[in-house]
Image (cartoon, rainbow, N blue to C red; front, side, top):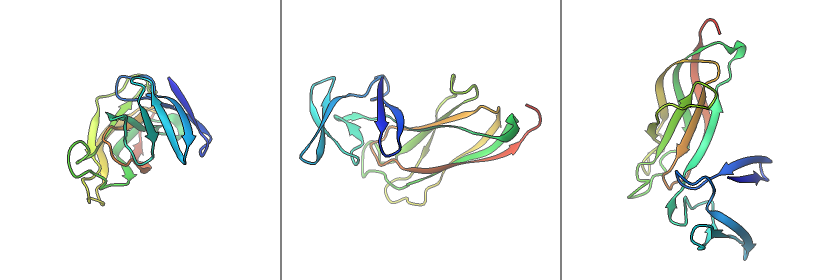
Length: 172
């Protein structure tokens, strides 16, 4: 596991590379000449850590954007009409992977132990700046449902907020 402390948010988070690695490929890092130089633990290659690059040493980078529980008073069941993400859209590439970038959503009804299948939505080909990201008909939810979102396309990833449109059920 690779645990990282973000000095700007003063929070810890975990990083990993790809879909199978449990650790981040960056093995060591040094700041020199105004850049962060990184060594790849798998190949020994040297790279530059850059906020505008969305792959790691040429490999797809899996980015978990958010794992968020829905909080509701009294722990009642919810009836969810839709989940919507407000995010920067229209960031697709001109060709190849990322030309129609997808965000994947899955949910857990047992507090993030077992997850559903993955449901994908486009967040906009290049220039589709008004693209909305919505999952409809989310059904009945227990009080401890957790949503998890991930992106693997090599594009900019900015999520501003998640909105759940819900009605309260009866009983716990």
